[in-house]
Length: 349
Image (cartoon, rainbow, N blue to C red; front, side, top):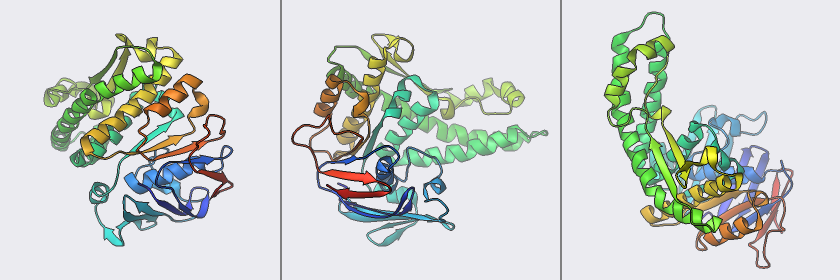
């Protein structure tokens, strides 16, 4: 899995060289010492993605112009660096020009954190990011469609805000949105359908109750995106924005036929958030043939004893788990290797 992690000017770490065990590891320390940053660095190294920011420039240490992350992952030496000239990626010393190629040769991840509760009761953007992160690991074409859709969407919205509308250009970008948007919505609908079974199994295992679970995909204009654009054309020009397409999609989670966001208790919502991530991990392993690494950020303090024990039982024993915590009270006698994190340093205990 991930056997080592090296950081230079990444967030609070000036420099770090950390060897990781082949199995799981627990990073313990007070808040704001850098524990989450270690998991974030692993996520950036493997998937070129931070769960905490959309802008890689924010990852560099204060007043520094660049950062670097490297490590041995799945038997490969991987390295990325980000400076004034942009992002450089290397695998086994060779420069990789395309992000898609870098990701295609990498591994799989599942991120679990307290913010996952927003998957159930937060805004639709949170659920779209969840779908995007899972889908890009399942299908390399998804990321390409998403990137092209986002570029066209940004340009089209600029055109819609102009005082004098250039209808020819707007139509050109509409065609691009239809082409890539329909592919994104097709893949999202399939992903939601695939997730339903594993999520339902995980929900029952963590809650200890037999509850019916439904995941309903709500594609904004899905099925005939071209007609959807035609129907909202006048409104778009009045409001100056694109009103249908994957950027407006959502997913509704139901427990026993009722929307979990409105009718689920906090315990049910928190359990469903865990089940969504466990289901994602199971689906990744099923479809890709290898277990993802689970990056688990300080969630055990928020769980009661039953859910905590059930979650530990549900996590695949053969999968690497990198866990952060402020307390070790939940650990059993046979705990994974421990690392103390404090003041931008980390060392094995």
